Image (tube, rainbow over all chains, first blue to last red; front, side, top):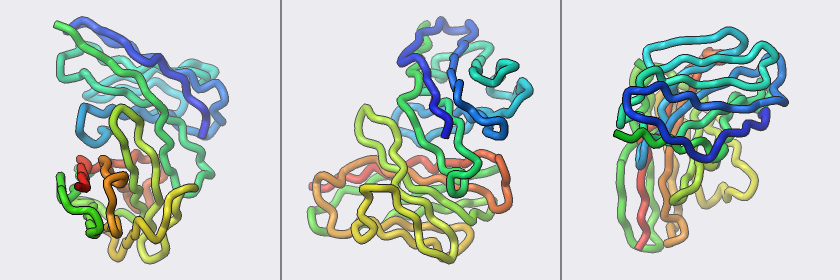
Length: 112
Length: 117
């Protein structure tokens, strides 16, 4: 897996955009970037993933830099329910079937 | 779609007993499932990769005789914690990868909180 680096914690005001950065400077050309989040005492929830192009779905947008060494997850209008730990993962395509290795993630606190 | 159900959600039992946790993919087939463990204030730690019809692959340091994994069908994997002791108390989480889903995401269950007295 490519090593990923994320800030330990971030705060965001309710209703504002939350921009969560992730550095993955050792990523290989065919490794996707996946984002998951874990709300307290629940299993991780898939958010979005991408390879080269920016991606958007009903939950978030993913902006990947042209050199693919970093990405940003954007929650356009954060709500209190978005408070969670957000994980950025770039699993190796050759790592025995796509297992995910979780780092410490970013603890996002959305405040009223 | 892509729902993974884990059962039970919580279990409390005495030291020395064995506990079975089930992980089911409800609306898709999963050749591969994964089992994780999470201690308080820590990240998820991968324990093993479960493959339908074959032996599980365990991560370094995880005792295969302690944590028995069975993946007998494309929609069910089970983790049995044998002779559980208080140090096995943890949050156990499974995930499933849809068959033939190259680069598609894993989907996770809601976890099982195991407390050994």
